[in-house]
Length: 208
Image (cartoon, rainbow, N blue to C red):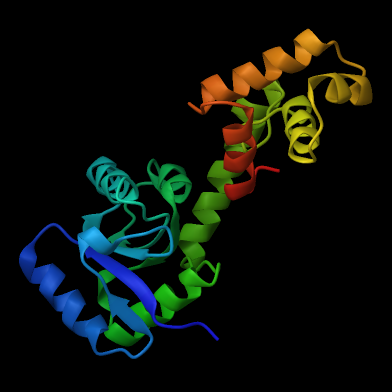
């Protein structure tokens, strides 16, 4: 059974923070935590006026604390920041008019258990954006929506199974140099330290 979900709240002003804190602190399924207690298991509740570049900066700053999943309370007037917000960990979105304590608690618990909740109109716009991205940008470059090519995904999966460079090369009929170059490209693109870090990152982010 899921225990109390650690929840960190970030808003642009003290009044909004106090209001959301008061609404959630009385919920038995929620534990509101301070900045210093944020971990990867913490669900961030970020409330802003609109999903824009400033909101993305806020999400990034909370991610730096360790938080990886978010409930966002904001209006979505533009689609430009939708995909970046999802990439940063936004799993649920609510308008301010529906952000009651009960509704926020539902979204936090759902997010903590791996769920997602987007308004139908926003979800439809997000799907259209992903489709356009796939057709116009990724497919012509041989990439999937996760940013990896088929070859890169294959190599990472085999490395994750414990194969060394020679074994991966033999399995896929590549040269060892090709395998090394592909792994180097992945670690450079995602700013990872080594192949172990690359595999851990790919598994954690659901890329393989």
